[in-house]
Length: 198
Length: 417
Image 1 (cartoon, each protein chain N blue to C red):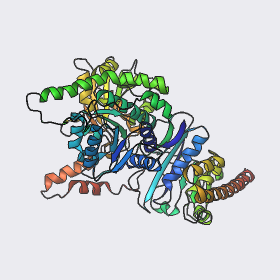
Image 2 (cartoon, rainbow over the protein chains, first blue to last red):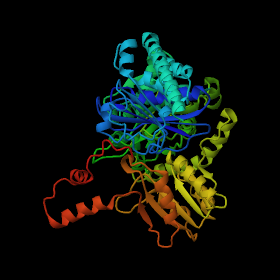
Image 3 (cartoon, rainbow over the protein chains, first blue to last red):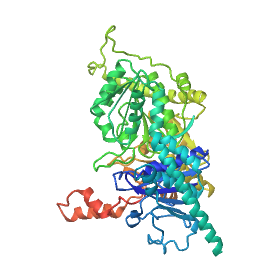
Image 4 (cartoon, each protein chain N blue to C red):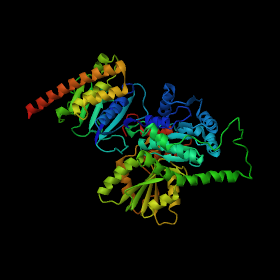
């Protein structure tokens, strides 16, 4: 079972992102369960949503306390919420920011982390560009597909078409595709560097 | 057709496939998405010959449901928590009048203190109201139970509550197999009421009944629930023939055949319990599960049959009978009358407290010890309770308890579990 935890703020589409991740996994014939943490769904308040992906029925209903991957939709949460709580050693981390991990002050924390598990992408900028709104969830999801290869970009696009239609869907697909390209290029670069060091 | 969708959406679609004629509801979280979904289907014309009535309160919702059901319309509503409590007088009337209304209860805690999270306090508070209560383990089961509920309700002329864990199921996206209209039509015939308010053939419904017949009328409701004990498994068999799925029935066991310890529970927590049981089985422990689908009527015989060879029974329930402990556990003890089996009550998950595999592992190990307590509160923070009790010993005006205890806990908004 692969477990993803998404952190963000109310209004950033955190819950929708988890739902779309589950739809993308479903489209690939897998079992998936997405659910929000409840109670603080106010605009700007910290929100957490979860998604489990597996090849058999998912019966477990506890919150995800030891995720395989983290998607952080708002880097200001790093100073407010223990977003890394329980993250498995070497787990995937994708952060929505135009800064680097070093600039975010995470260099020490992630010193021994495999480079091909870490990525940042300026998803808010991408959604502004393609959708006209600061809604980083969909570009991040596509970036996550490129980072983890748990789901394909085509499945993310199917999930976009499930949730949105018309101009919003088209904009999100454009944003998703660009984010996927950016992250894939970053990952290739990271792997090249890793190989050079080895 | 397989689809990945929200539990509320799955229920809305299933209810629509049952061809309801009147939907009357008042929004309350976590039920809101269900009636919103059906409302959209009525407005778009996808659900035909159905009137969606926006009412001013839950009391009105159930009152309108009584009226429309008495007029011969297949009637549905949904509620939760304080909403269910607000409609209680009408809830009792619906069952007393023998009206086959189907209602979803998206289970949620009851205040005070205010809490919008899941537990079973709401529907359990109505255990004696005369409605049949079915509990769903998954969104697939919630969907399926609604289809069975209309048939069960209408055959018996009794209202049915389908209880599904609020948020945990209603807001979860998972895979469901959505039946076709043809399948549902093959299973569920058009509603043929026993009593109709019809101006052409006038009758009175709800007349005064004095001591001369009140007990008999009341007993009739009990007799019908006893009939439901026969009908519920029968409908599950019919359902399987049409839909190919094992859903419903009175109870369901899991790895319980040779089990020395059997855990009894209702609703979505059964999934987590089964995962724990699998791990404990792998470690050689003889442990199994009994899920109760039909809480009312309570299937005493089926429960006794499932548990009779166990050494100990652990009843895990998401509600608290303040002043005594367990509610489901009391019913289970009645089922096991005169059998030499230890029954333990575990109160867990109140107000949305997460029930984790880790806690359940620890709990089930503890229950094997000779000195296991008969009532356990899973993951209760005794420090917080004791500090408040100590404050109250030392001082008269201690102020509001919940607020003081919240201060002791510190902020919880950003905690993950």
